Image 1 (cartoon, rainbow, N blue to C red):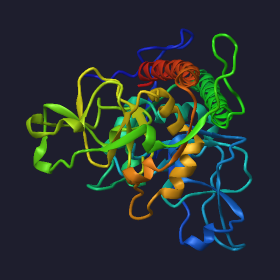
Image 2 (cartoon, rainbow, N blue to C red):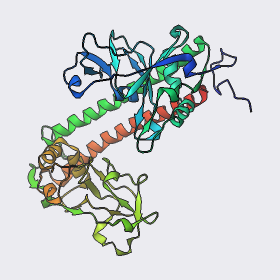
Image 3 (cartoon, helix red, strand yellow):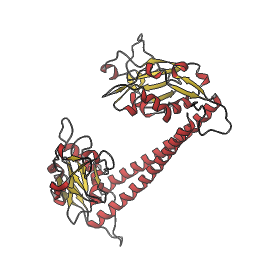
Image 4 (cartoon, rainbow, N blue to C red):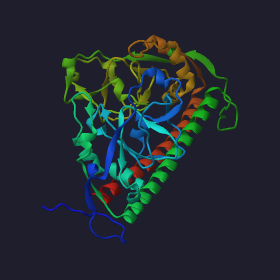
Length: 414
């Protein structure tokens, strides 16, 4: 079957087939920094593009501020990055993330590339639109081709020799410019939406600081002040129940889900990365039901919490905790307090350093919490929940826009 040389979706003013070329035909490759040691990155005198700069950005534009710094001697020979260069990450822990690309369209006079990426310079750059190249190389079809060239078992690596034979499809320069400008404008809208979300999160953080420091107080429905807050130890109002020490032979491919520390992310997620157990022998205190407040007590997510929001029950794994509250505590209030800096500051003091951070149940129960009356707790939690819902709505809009862009990229590139 003859390969289709036109995209499914196209601007109406353009027609005709696109040109098929290998990357090796279109340009040449160069290496990033070489021969550098840790000391060269302590007090650097030159900017360089870091690995994550490449990984996270389709385009590195003028005004970009997240460069690293490296020491470069006067007569030292290193490759520099030029306008329009394509940058490839060459190593990744997962196959799907190998060979991520970014196109440099900044205006730095002298800038270098990190050691774990390589550069690609297009011959006759005036015949190519850099923004088109950036989006084309991140399109689904081209990403699949790049991923297939990754090699390795525990880490996946990519070399220029593997990339040079990748085929891509190039329209005329005017069509490149039209496509590049179109997706550039979409990305600008996505950036604005992301900034809107970040501003809302900062607003919520500021309100939490004022609320839990009692700079702001709520009034009752008659406009009267609520009683003064009481300082309590957390264990006085909410005991912490640890999880069950499951053995590897307890794990099943179906049954009752087990909530592990990896499932506690500021919310509880048992839709991915989940294992199961047959619960005939598991004591009742290790079950989790809808509405329970859980906390991670070990690993990178130590101190993260979330309210279990599933109708079916689950089991709680070791190194996870479940709060059991008294009638004077409104769970969502405690959840909001655990999200605050007042909890984080006490957590950092108690964290046990080691191969991975962890905290004991008694440490959590010894933390001090300022407790308003139940009606004021409810008002505080409802107010903060309303901010959360607003943030979630904006995040949903962002995700919908990302999916819209993804669908367009799949149809507008070959």
